[in-house]
Structures are given as C-alpha cells and as structure tokens.
Length: 106
Image (cartoon, rainbow, N blue to C red; front, side):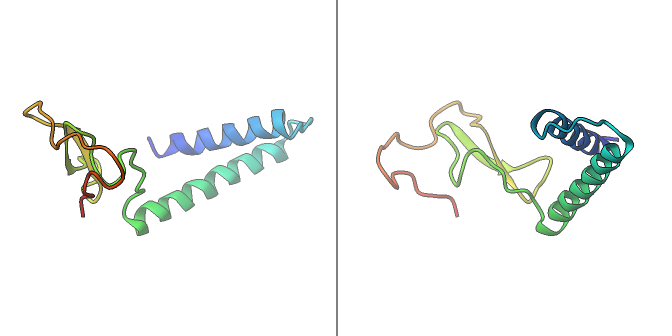
C-alpha cells in the first residue's frame, strides 16, 4: 500500500506543475494520462535505484555523527548507518574546532 502513495503524490505534483507553473489551461484526459505515466516511470526508476544501489545514501549527518551520538546500523536499512543519542548521555569526543578536527569514520 505504501508503495502506491509516492506514485499518487508524483501524479499530483505533475498535475499541479502543469496547471500552476506551465499554465496549461485544459485539464483533459491526456493530462491525466501524462501524470499517471510520469508517476509510474518515477516509481520504477526509484525502485531500480533502491534495489540495485542498495540504499539511497541520504544522511544529514555526513561521515561523522554529531557530538553525543553514536553510529548504528539503520533499523529500516541495515546497509546504511544512522546516528542515535549515546546511551551514556555524554559527549562522544572532545569539542575541537577547525577543519579535520573530528576524524571521519571509515
């Protein structure tokens, strides 16, 4: 069921773009067919990307977790790490400043 939602959202975004940005006047069946095919192609491309690339690789933390957090495998995708608050509640490294002050996790 949740795989259907991105397709519907993709079709709605396409329809809104055609109506409000491209200023397309006619809301006919051809436009709905275009929106549906756009949504199907987008879902297929993203499925292929997730399946064959293994993960999306979109993390907001970069190579190192913020201070006070530890890195664990993501529960939703074990191939991708995520950062969670440290169980001890303490800083995980000294607060140094400057470039390369924190060694990147390899």
